[in-house]
Image (cartoon, rainbow, N blue to C red; front, top):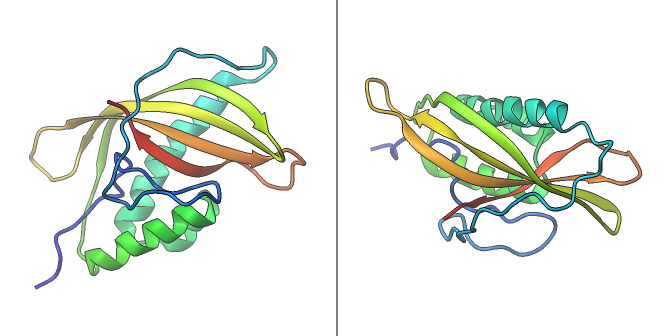
Length: 161
């Protein structure tokens, strides 16, 4: 019997940024925090628009099992975690309906050779047809090389408490 369908569960923490992280099922809860470091000339509205589109895109790519699409906008560590999750679902069909998604830039910092942005994503999703939507609230950590050699990628996702 095939395993039950699983959406890409961004409510569970993914290892990212080259650091060892907890397993997929060991979510570390975070508290919401106020914005701290965001440069005045940063296009926050444009950045958040793309972040929300990528949230929807990641859910759709996961539902379709499109690993090549997923690989384009997540770090290698996050990709490995998603690939493991895909293997556990054994080709079970699924469809995640993103009912609403909002995004807030919490922080944008530069650490060594990487820019790191923390974005709080929340809203409502439906994981099965004809069921009520459920709330989600998480922080996406995105990273980008300072030298401009690559774009923003999802480097980790943590559940907000």
